[in-house]
Image 1 (cartoon, one colour):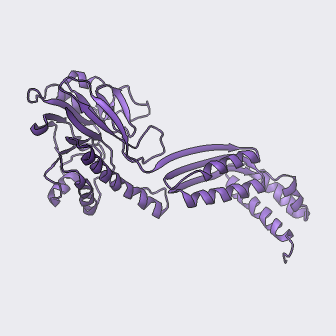
Image 2: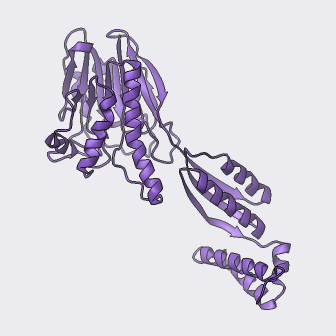
Image 3: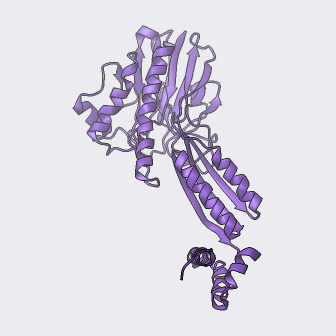
Length: 375
């Protein structure tokens, strides 16, 4: 029995510029944390090896400290690691990998081949056919070499590559770094461990994308796993188990409001969010002032309880109801201004400013009319 973990797309050093500074720092730190969890999982399960299918680092320009921290995070598993370069951290002449070697921080149990070849792990009867990318984009199938790469007789043959399997990913995915869908069969592989697609995906019984072990974008393609793979003997069908490793849950909600009950239902959904949630919220529609205020309170409360919240309420129009308009009738001029602002919300170029001005006007008029208010 050959037993290993398959993981990929750690993207160490990734930046999260769309978030607040403290949230971005925590999301970046989570990528180190998940590597430590993978190492602990490998030790706990007693696997023979851990295979990492590319994009270990998010960019070539990560700091020396980041490189050292990555390999330190792997220390919880003392068995063999085999990791390759992907498109984000391609094995260029001068790359993050060459710097790691210069720093002397790659442990002896970590194999990081910089050219296509066989990493023979005789002690565990495993031959890893590795195809690190040596440039960010190529239109040649780097796994084609697997067809002619020989391994010791009786070894379990596992391919390790990074790219896009032709015809198996969404049409919008970049077609660079192609991989033939039948590569496992052509190259007599017992298993083909892939990276690049950030979701966990089975291409066939012997070909899998592990996906990123810690979700890093708003795409519902089942990220947040590593794969536990067991192969009884050369030629046997692999037994693949998905193991959840992700901490944060990224969600994208697009809501259209037209009734106060719509906003109430959204507020209840947000109230159920927890500290592990990362939410992008896009709200459109139209509401009265009371509903707007209630929704804003719900958004503020959610922002305080989740890891990160990116709200976009720019598509939400304020449409005063009878109660709102009654407050404005205290002044004919104020009412006229409110009507003009309400009309301007229909102009895409002025909608955001007009909506905010109308909200401020209504709020000011309401506060002025409150008992005890002074002029």
